[in-house]
Image 1 (tube, rainbow, N blue to C red):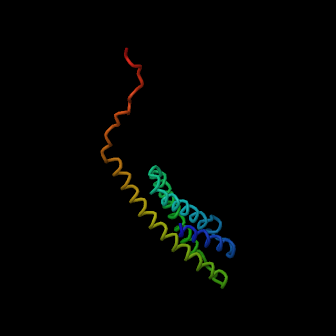
Image 2: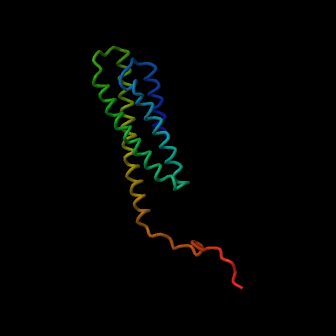
Image 3: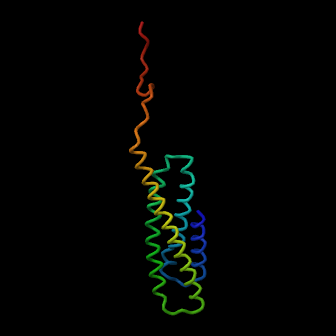
Length: 144
C-alpha cells in the first residue's frame, strides 16, 4: 500500500511540474499507484476473509500487467528525452524514481501471484471435509 501511495504522489508531482511526456499523458504512475493501493488493501484483508483469494489473485495479475506496461512506457520515455535542461533534468530524476518504485512493486506483485497461485492449488488438492449429516437432509412429515 505504501508503494502505491508513493507512486501516486510521485505521479501527481510529475504531472504538475513536468512538460507533457508519454508517462504523463498515459498517467502511468497514477494508475499503477491506485492499482497497487487497492491490491494492498485486498491483500491485507485476505487474512480475515479467505473468499477474497481469487479476487486478490486476479487483481495482482492485473497489477503485474499494468506495472509491466508502465516499466516499458517509463523506459521509452526516459530514452526519448533529448534536450536536457535543468527543469527536464529534475523531471527525469522523478521518472527514474517512479521507474524504481514500479519495478519494486512488480517484483512484489510477482511474488504475491506465485504465493497465491500455490495457495489456490493447495486448496483444490486438499481433501474435502466430511459431509455434514445435515447436508442434503430434507424435511419430511413424521410418520404416524
